[in-house]
Length: 310
Image (tube, rainbow, N blue to C red; front, side):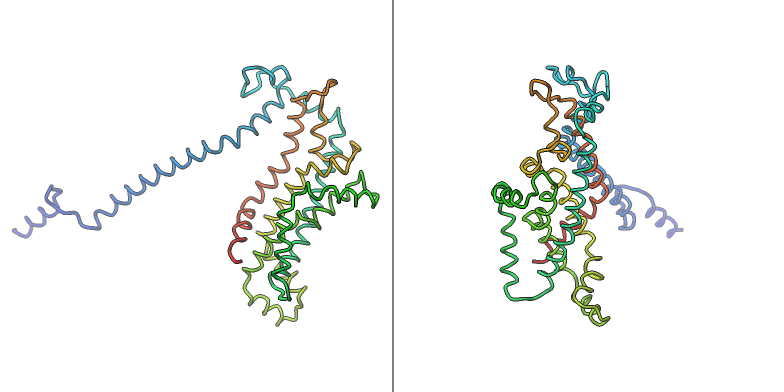
C-alpha cells in the first residue's frame, strides 16, 4: 500500500515535483520550433522589403508599357494602368525592324557565349593543370585585362575593324568579346574550378590511354557544368546589353542590336516615346530573365567554386 501511494505522488503534477529530461524534451523542442518560426517569418519579411527596390523598376517598366503617354506623364503616377492597352507593342514593330534587331542580339549573344565558354575553358584548364615556365606571370598578365575599360581600347579597335573592312557588320561584336578582355573573367572562373578537380581523375584518364586533349574534353569539361553555367549567364548578359560597341561599329537599322535600337524610339521633335520605349524594353528583358531563372542554381554554384582554391 505504501509503494502505491509513493508512485501516485511521484506521478502527480505537483509544484514540487521535478520533470525528468525525457519529459522536458517535447517542451524544449516546441519552444525552439516557435522561436525558429518567428525568426523565419521575420527574415522573409525583411527579404521582401529589401527586394522592393529591385522589383519595383521592373514592375514600373512592365505596367507603364500598357499605359498611354498621357498617363505616364501624370504628376501623380499610377501603379497600374487605368485603361490598359497593347498599342505600344504594335508601335515597337511598326516604327523599326524590331524583329530583325531582336534576332541580331540573340544570335550574337549565343555565338559570343559559346565561343567564350570554349576559349575560356581551354585557357582555364591550361592555367590550372599544365605546368610550364612563367604560367603564374602569364596568368597575372591576363588578369590585367580586367582593369582595362572598354572605352580605352575602343579607338584602336575601331581603326583595326575599319582597316579590315568590317564596319557595319556583326563580326567585331562576336570576335572581339571572345578573344578580348571580356573573356578574362570567364577564364578566371574556369581556372579556379579546374583547380578543385582531384588529380586522381587525370591519372585515371592517362591509365585509360587518354592524352591531354582527351582528359580535358572527356573528363574535366563535362564536370565543370556549374562553372560553365556561371560563365554562360554573365557572358550572355554582357553581350545582350552591349551598347558602346554597336554604336561605334553599326550604322544600319537592320544591323542594330537591341540596346542601340531602344534609343531610336523618338517622336518628330526628338523626344522619347516613353510607352513605346518601355514596351520594347519589356520585350528585351524576357530572354535575360529566362536564362537566369533556368540556370540560377548553377550560376551560384559556379561563382562559389571560384574561391575554393587559389
